[in-house]
Amino acid sequence: MSDALIAAVGRPWRKPPLVQRKWLRWTLMAGLIAYIIAAVMTIEVNWSRVYEGLERGKQFVLAFTSPDFTARSSDIWEGMLESIIMTVAASVVGIAISIPIALGAARNVAPLPVYLICRGIIAVSRALQEIIVAILLVAIFGFGPLAGFLTLSFATIGFLSKLLAEDIESMDRAQAEAIRASGARWTQWINYGVQPQVMPRLIGLSMYRLDINFRESAILGLVGAGGIGATLNTAFDRYEYDTAAAILIIIIVIVMGLEYLSGIIRARVQ
Amino acid sequence: MLRLEKLVKTYKTGDQALRAVDLEVPEGQVLALIGPSGAGKSTLIRCINRLVEPTSGKVYLGQTELTGLSSSALRRERRRMGMIFQEYALVERLTVMENVLSGRLGYVGFWRSFTRRFPQADVDEAFRLLDRVGLLEMADKRADELSGGQRQRVGICRALIQNPALLLVDEPTASLDPKTSRQIMRLICELCAERGLAAIINIHDVALAQMFVQRVIGLRFGAIEFDGPPEALTSDVLTTIYGEEDWEATIAKVDEDDAEIEASQ
Image (cartoon, rainbow over the protein chains, first blue to last red):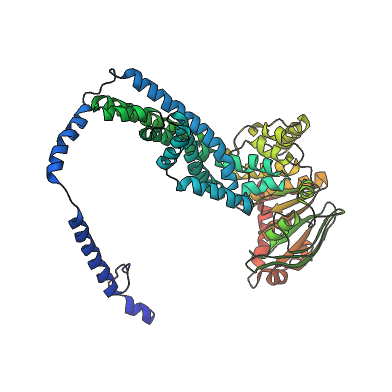
């Protein structure tokens, strides 16, 4: 046995602390507790207002026990149809535009200038929040589903291009290299060497985005970009909680249906 | 047929993978490239078809000098160099047939390949090759359903359907069991003989190389240390290539193994 081992045997072992210096560790700890106390003390609650509000909250929740699908059924139906059309159209257009941008934004496929431009487009699309884009587009194109469609297409580009580009960047190089070695041109290389590798991810992401776009379409209505959100907003404005509850239930069912469908599709394409 | 002149590759990290390699491979010669990991074997064969860009030096395939070619001229020349990869490098989600036909991509236009409507002659040749390697009934299977040995045979078909003049073979038997390794090496060497192809085979297994090839090149630190027939690979030579180790066991084992395999067949 070496001297180092003799010294080590019999000594208890504990995981080294995250912060090595003892005084710094205690200072951080004390600071955290002080922050929590200070933060809690700054919360101002008007308890009488909460008491009044509880009643309204109760009505809202109770409305779910008696959702009213019939009173405004034609409004709900129209809004829902508009939302679905908006979602599907925006997803198709957004995905179609995303694919070339994703190729451009993958460093192992695109040359540097193209890469920078495509990453720039993605950054802009991701930086602008959907609601803000929707407000801008409603200002330009007026109220209605066109603004919603454009907003969702724009948001899809940032989401799908980024994630697809990352998948392209992490693909198996050997498979792509083998295609290149055969003398394939760039387009053939993409079609044979890259596309098969990223196809399951592309399909999975597309399904996921379809699901997100539908949920977003309900929100966008609140700023006037058409769809079921507009109907929902109207129902709230009129304090028709039972109609609002019916709309929310339909949205939940559709989102869950899409989730289930995308699960099946993703399992199939593996 | 293939001539390398003062081929140098220095990676961006400053690693000198190849130091002025001169090499001439005559028509129809099968050559094994041995050497320790990091000696530059993979870099050497990738510099020939420019999957790795050489830093300086010249590569002549027949009369054509490859290092100065434009990208479209390079594509045409790559068709004459079939490549077989370590761990097969099949596109796993494509069918066996698509993988084999991908060897023809240099010859067909984009739309033909995109719609998978290859000329009948190419399809016939693909079936002939698959039959030759015993995988005809696997044509419509997906590549990832195949075993290692089967995948490498598909890789061989993909290289041969290019109708190449030269095969570049990178560790064809890595991750295969000893018996399959021999079958694959035997198949490559037989096909080279049938078609009069020259081949450069990177290989770790010295004994396997000795069994099948006509000429062995030993690479160490990016320079050629040995160039001669397989019989000339003595333990002294292996020591200069790989460093000090007891080589007698490695070389002696070859004959025993061989006898064993012959006996079992």
